[in-house]
Image 1 (cartoon, rainbow, N blue to C red):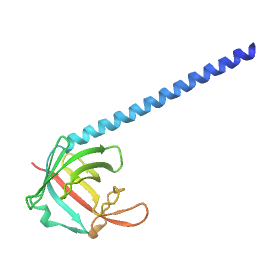
Image 2 (image 1 turned 90 degrees about the horizontal axis):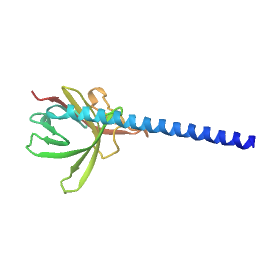
Image 3 (image 1 turned 30 degrees about the horizontal axis):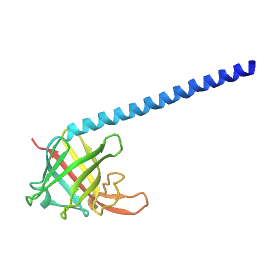
Image 4 (image 1 turned 135 degrees about the horizontal axis):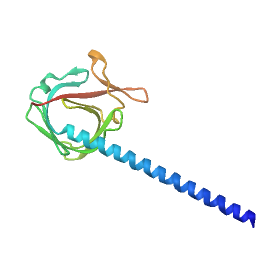
Length: 174
């Protein structure tokens, strides 16, 4: 009888321990989601407004012709990009993770043939500056910003190959 009571006590103690551990894991997940939601809301608020092109690097050179008149207007999750040529692109911000390093953003765009695609980029934003970086060859999301002097930015991929990237830098319009 004593063995049965001891066995029941051990089972009850294990059940309480498992329950407490499960609750702790649930609380950690909830806290992580709240942190991500707050960071996302903060960055979406910072992104709102009009941004003027300051620098665009592509293929290792500055695209001066693309800078003049280039601007982005972000309202809610709509990302409107106006080029010097007068053409406009509209994208939707479908995902932001401001807790990653670097921060990640996914834009849903339509190509010239009308097919939608997801552009995976990394970004930085503060009160006065917004920059984003993506690979021009449709490769995976960059793993970090690449700044390599006069050769311009490129991404060093995890598998060791160099992939050319495009870096857009903007300042907040006054």
